[in-house]
Image (tube, rainbow, N blue to C red; front, side):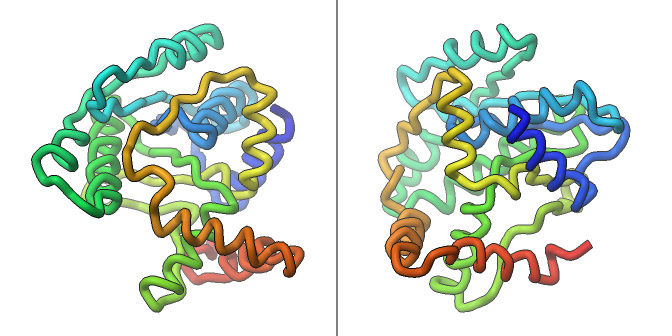
Length: 234
């Protein structure tokens, strides 16, 4: 946990992600990134000089047979409550719309549902589990598929919702996250989506893995370029 907290606190401080009195919603998907984020923020709130609260939210997408009791028990044992919010996202995307390329619509609906849940729970910020590799992949996806140099910001304000998006795991790599989760004993909820692993992001992930074999430090150099983007500067 010390390794997680070290990286998390540096990102939080570098980009002023947390202020006194914040109530921060954490979107817990059940995957390794969101669980690391949730555990890290719950630990950080106990000693961070600026006092803040954490609200853990898991969106039930509506897949038949989904069981979140293991995750709820895991967080309960740590003194935290995992709030389950039911949605009809699976029904809308696959049953009603019958999307052949569902990722964009699904992501949009999940963002909207999480933002609305955060507001319902009285939160002013939403923490997302994006790490270094996510930033690098997003940057490359923008370059390859949109023809522009762009990436998400460490802190984003949503004017319509009056919410801030923060990404406290930005300085952790995917390998860091995997190492922590393997030691944490946390149950992992496997994404049941039929499109999982068959996306443009997976294509970029595989491409970077191949390029990195002959270009040591490639991801680190790309991340340095990402940090130079205008929307990353404070």
